[in-house]
Length: 374
Image 1 (cartoon, helix red, strand yellow):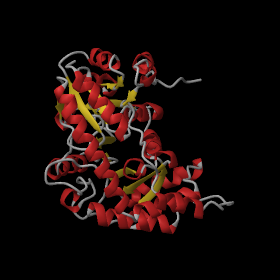
Image 2 (image 1 turned 120 degrees about the vertical axis):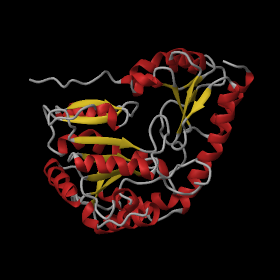
Image 3 (image 1 turned 90 degrees about the vertical axis):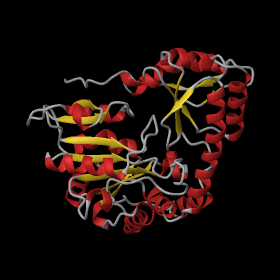
Image 4 (image 1 turned 180 degrees about the vertical axis):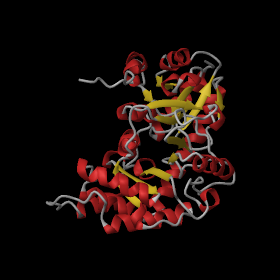
């Protein structure tokens, strides 16, 4: 029996520091995992209840209501025109990220390009399929290409987890042109698109790989992955989506039907309602914006340098030392953060600090950080 070549689950190694932070007299401030803590919007909770009577199997392809809501959301929030035959619901976005190489038929001998500093599941997804993940720091890092060294799938992530960088239209256009010249599928993880903190971008979503300014009139070879976990506090619902090249979507759908990968029917209705309402998204964005403003000032006052962090739910910070040393210093103040090494060797001198805590816990963290420099 073959054994999957998977790395150790990184979060297990953080457990001793969680214990250390929990010993603080005022309790732990856990800024390590980006899990939403604010309530799921009332209109979404009501929608879930309305669809609770669901005795039959849901469709893998998704209801007409949901697919129409996804297409309308792409048009309204991302400036992307897409057909309902070119979108699919997914059971959260992590599931799609982990299984996409296998869904596309990749395997031994195939290469998957992943960002050099990245969410670990891109790497894991390649390994699950039996393919080889190769870290890329820009297209030139792939080196001279041959049929054996050209990736079949290239992941981009903007806004990026963990460091929050945003890839502009010109950069994304170059990625698309390169990929099409080499017949490479590009999958763009855009889960933090509604959380853009750059000056002058308030209330705007970041550029999508599917936008006509990026890819022209065709979505050939392109996929955009999205999640409602961040914008709508639906992490517990496992509500994600993918859209793009209709031919690729059809291939993915066929395998998913055989595998029974179906978003539950009540969640499909709730997701459709969430996608149709921008008011709660704006309110959640404002809440994260306030927390971010407070936390940036406190982190800097404590002697850390915040880099990138242009968008998303995290601060990418360093004090020019090994990341585990910074994790330990913060744990002694009752604050738990994620070491940058979780996201690849280039992150070894940074920590990722989440904005996903209540206002009260963010204020507690700021008070602790402001009491003395690390």
